[in-house]
Image: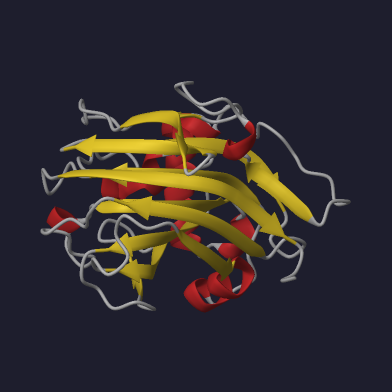
Length: 255
């Protein structure tokens, strides 16, 4: 992965979030609460463009952005994302210890899947909904050549990029349960948690053991979480989709 190379397409989210995260962590959680409300969308007022503590995530060379806003759905405030051949996300900069809070829980709903979506190809690297977890840079977890790449990235951007990311996706036709590297970089591993049209236009509750997923994906202990992002994109396929995101929670343990 060449950090100086200009790359088109939303699949390179791991690179795209570098500049957003360079301003530092927006908040560091204490270790007293059993549940961390990272995306407390339901407590906010519908009609606002962005939820508080979240900010836009845009990508170089992508001029058409997904439109995000807070709306009411089934009596709750949620984030609506509308993509029309577009790509962008929302991100919250936050530091969380994944060993202390290994469980992530969220809700989502999509209007349709993307017919040209393909988890194995850059041209199909679009998803109606996905949740990203970013992990902080840790030089002790890099090989010699990887350290050189990260040093080059620091020279170019002024800060080290995140070490890695995990992406939970709603795929078009990939089998549920599949773990696959992103088509742009193997530092971003995707888990297919929903696939196909069986549950479109329905709210679906999700829960993952993020700590276990990281160990499976990278064969190592995870570093600190440095950010959480949501993204609905269709820039590669040129299709149209609407997604909704409910509250995003991190838990110390399953209830």
